[in-house]
Image 1 (cartoon, rainbow, N blue to C red):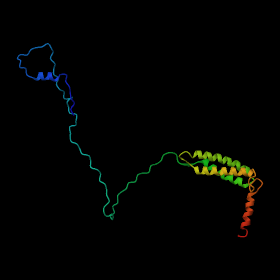
Image 2 (tube, one colour):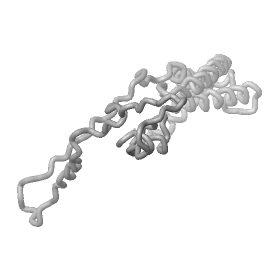
Image 3 (cartoon, helix red, strand yellow):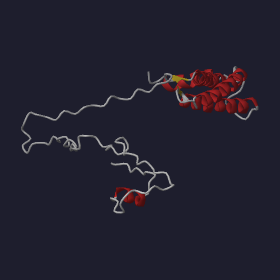
Image 4 (cartoon, rainbow, N blue to C red):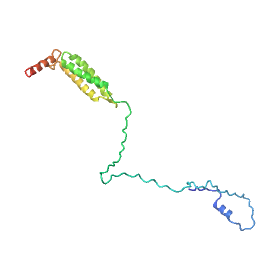
Amino acid sequence: MRLPTFSRQSEAETAEADRPSTAGPATTTDTPARAVRPRSDDTTADLRPADRTVTPPPPPAAVKRWPDNHDTAEQPVVEEKPTPVVTGPKPRASLLATLGLILSVAAVLLVLSGPLLGYGIGVAGLALILSLAGIHATGKRHVAGKTDALIGMVLSLGAIVLGVLALTGSLSWLGTDVQPVNSLREWLDSQFVNKI
């Protein structure tokens, strides 16, 4: 690519200077003569590389095709991509959810025991608080145990409702003066005494 250069002389002046004079001896004028500046090779140099040959792009890679007969032993090699490794903290179970589940099971057993009914309601209240905290803790990505927390919450709510109903006298088979464990044992003995 050639870059155009513009000299300070106009084309008319250069044409007059290049034409041979036919008027005879040279006359002097009052205007100073302008010196014609020679073209420099730097401004008119070709900026393209010397090697003007264009190399064609490489041919596309050959695709391996299955042969027509499938009896050949040669099988195409399949490269397996490595599985991505997830960085971050290791998954763990929520301690609050696990404690909530354990205490809710204990609360149900205490409520069903009869005489320990009041303690069962207190343990169920604590289990409900721990289960709710466990549900909140499992909202994080690397913390598991949401099912444990939900089961603990349901069991603790059931133990509280059952305990309150038993304390108010709404349930005739459960109360602080009733021995449901002894009654269950007597019923089981009466059912299986003849069969064993």
